[in-house]
Amino acid sequence: MEKKEFPKKWAEPKIKATSREGEPKAGSAKPAWISNKVFDIIKLILGICLLPFVYSTTVAFLNQIASIDISLQNYFWAGVVTLVLVYLFVWEPTVVYERGHRLVEIIFSFFQPLVKFAPYLLPIYTIVLFILYLFLCIFIRDKWLHEWAMFLFGLSIALHLIFAAQSIRSKKGDLLKSNYIFGFSFMYIISLGLVALFLNFIFKEFSFVNFLNNGYSIASAIFQAVFSQLFMVRS
Image (cartoon, rainbow, N blue to C red; front, top):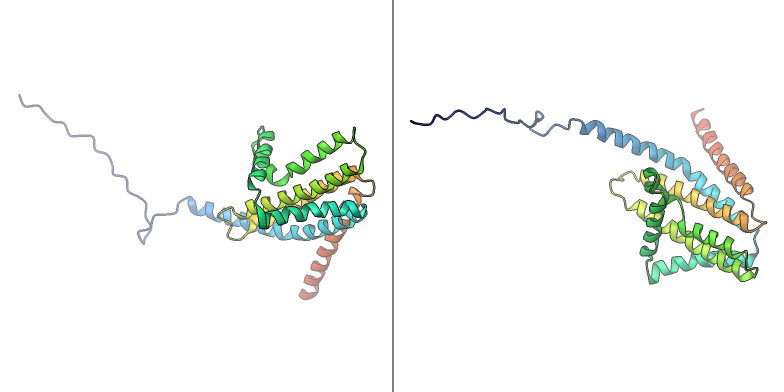
């Protein structure tokens, strides 16, 4: 007897949604693209608003560090210059920064949002050096400890700022540079504030409170000047 063949179950062919021109429809991708661009614009505006604080914290830090003994100031700036010269002409210590970056990720692995942002905000080597300095102060009272501490503080903060900025700048999809302007400005302010806090504990001449007050007053003056100019133009 001839075997009967039953027709296979008919399946509706999948038709790819297309627009009038025959292009695939964006669907939900278009609202996502718009929201991303709006978020980029907001970050750009916030980054521009942070720029006066970048300037004011820099000026406030320079004013406060000038109160420390000149020889110790020179050791700090020698550390900064040493890192810059090594980076430009000798060797890029990328592996050193990446290991510190990885260390921060391990420390904050319990909370995922901190894993993403903490390595850029926290100068881990400067923090470790400060803790080590506090421990050594118990046993060592010589001036050379202060000198080496200042040199290594300058070296480590320069390392953090250079490579954190490089990492933020190298991220893709930042056409408006909003991530870089906002991210670097915020990172710079936090990092410089931490160094100021450490120096406040080490030197009685350095005042963290004055650093904050000066930074705030300078930034406020900048915003008032900008707003007054805008008001005058409109009037």
